[in-house]
Length: 198
Image (cartoon, rainbow, N blue to C red; front, side, top):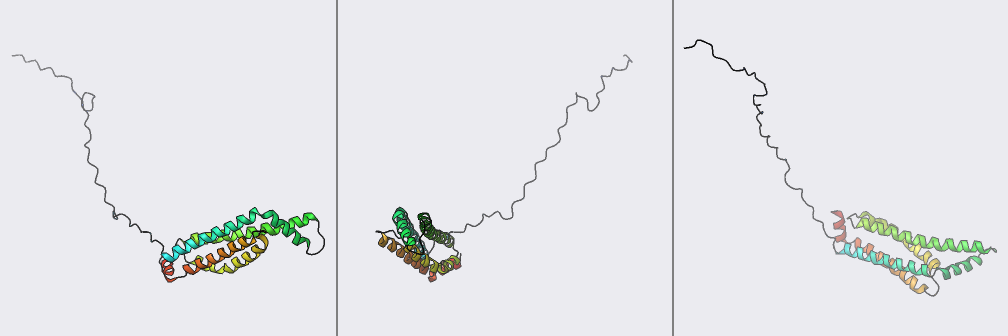
């Protein structure tokens, strides 16, 4: 039996390429905590306007339509009305040159039409706010009602076209009456309750 020592193989050191790498153990991610308020947010149902508020909206819209038709009628007949205003300006005071008379007539006519359309625009904006369940526009509309009547009276004398003045005045009167009826409808008890809980 040979007493020669056994040949030892090459010694492998830890961390050499021949040694397979040990992958770190993967731990599952902890579960995410649930939200405290997981219930869906409540949906507020839109409350339809009651009858008086719906009537207010309809009456105001018809009132605006009457005013716009009156303004369109005046615009289409503006030449004859400007001639009449020029004659009126010529009969007041001392003699003036034709250029001054044209300027006076144009300023009076366009100023009257502009004031009339601005008033309709303000009322339309207040109506839009009112339909969002805001009750304060009713009192603003009630406060400008005398202004509306004054503009209607002044505009009727300045903008009324010759030959169609009857239709023009009827449209203005219809617009004012419809606006007053709309205001009255918005002050009814059912309308007050709708605005109060808005």
